[in-house]
Amino acid sequence: MALRKLVYYVASTLDGFIAAPDGSYDFFPLEPDVSEYLVAHWPQTLPTFAHAEFGIDQPQGRFDAVVMGRATYDPALAVGVTSPYAHLKQYVFSRSLPPSTDAGVEIVSGDPVSFVRELKRQPGRDIWLCGGGELAGQLLSEIDELVIKLHPIVAGRGIPLANRDFDPHRFALVGSRTFDSGLVLLHYARSVPEPSSER
Image 1 (cartoon, rainbow, N blue to C red):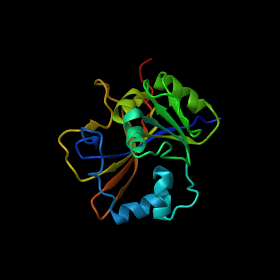
Image 2: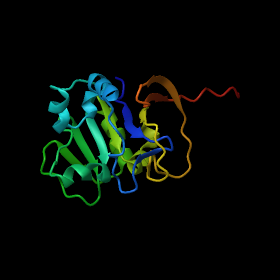
Image 3: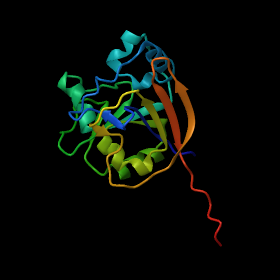
């Protein structure tokens, strides 16, 4: 049985930031041509409360779970939304949050790598890593695919795509799509190391 894949699907600036220094990401525009594509191909990555606005009913796709860090979860909590992706099983990594009162959200205080490895072995669809940079940095070795919505923006500072010590991981480009509004969707898969020719 094939293992579930961890897919890091995220918006990024040209200089590699997924959010402003304060964690906000409202400077990323959602242009009509991009939103139409996302609704058609990635509806599960849109928050549940936005589904009616986009005409989404019971979104279908490759995911049945989403993992995120505390900083990614906080904006929803700030406006009273305890289950931002209620159509998926949600795992929030935090050592300070109390257990969730929402049945669709599990607060995980343990090691993210061990937890995700175990999650991959369980039956189910693929797992979406929606952020943030700290969690992505910890889980870099477990990321099987990268799907980056690359915006034509240079931010200068912010939260990096993967915040960790220098440790290069190679990915292979498996697809791309360019939108008239300037965004480029880049789809990468983890590169498999070539067998050594040494004997």
